[in-house]
Image 1 (cartoon, chains in turn purple, brown):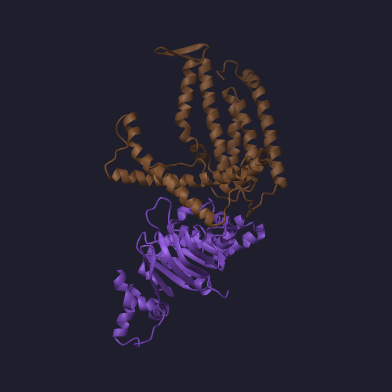
Image 2 (cartoon, chains in turn orange, cyan):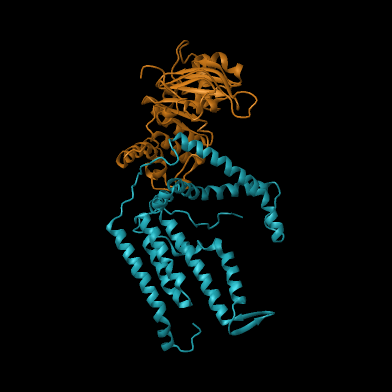
Length: 272
Length: 281
């Protein structure tokens, strides 16, 4: 794809009965394959923007294009939702079926795919999320981490070009979060665009770009390195332990000044 | 104190048994046909075929009979209430008195039969739900109700509603427990006092649970929409329903069994009278 996967221009959205818009004058362009961390306090408009990018909400002013398609065109909504999957915070709110594989198949069934094609995408999504062994288990019997991976599998079964994660790791324990993030890294490496809404700074280290929202507007948009070095304190975010370590190593001369090793490479080197 | 202690009614138990693998339409129709057995039963011995049938389903499905029996627990209060009404208010030959209340031989038989009938009904429904995943059940019900689409009945929407309702039973029980524990940690008492006091103590659980249900419904609707669900739109299936020869064989067995049971009901008492003429049954 040549153009950006998401292109939001001058977007505004006001909920019915609200005194002020949830987001206003938002301009954002995301290229295919990017991993964007969307940060901001509660009520800053992150989730509204996420729903807008999935065509669940249509801007009351401005435009939102997904893969060149205008989200305000109701006829394109199914195409947009097929290509942009949204994973919510609480997996219990998005698991529709009682059996794992039946839930993963829910999206492809809605798309009207033939049974063999559904089976193939379900198989792939379960394998990617490490849930193949649990395919015939009851969804209510899964652990929190497994439920969140099931929600991700349900999204992946749509074979999307982009994934939007709305605080999808907030209910996971550290181990579950690590495994979920590993899965995301693998998907991003395969070219899937990731938009990750989170409050956890340790998750942001994987992002290739950081966007900060404040009071419904984009307050900052840029490279993670500049954010951590120059802007983090201004927005009141903590520095993730991985980056704190990198700073210490750099101060001790173990990492040459001016170099920017990828955090994952650094962690892998340290583990070795 | 747990809401979901031993709760098994309506919860699917995944498995690979012969009963599990039957077409859901076969299981739904089979259950309705089998209900004729307890409904036709008028005396205690008439329930022997129904008990045998439930035991056979339990053995063939790999679901323990005790688990099936436990499925009737939520309706024990209803059963007890119905039994008491029948016991004391059925006219007939008096066998004893409890204060102003007369207990008749006919009342004893009727109370026993009605209780067993309700219990059998619940157990049969539980056997169906335990061996049929909600998605399969909804697909089966959707197909069986499909003729109603002619009169604009929203068949597929009803089927989806059934799926979601069944899926959320365990979640709502967990939710109730969570709210209950939260209220108990703040001093709420659900275990002491009379019936009215205890019923009143449940109000602080019902209010937040009710709100939670609406929030959850709203979130689920958004999640379903984001996964391209459009009410009433045609959908395909991961496992399309296929009526196989084993389903036909199972239906034939069910019908044969029901006929046998009705014959049993007709002749077993003649046999019992021959063997033991003074028997109460």
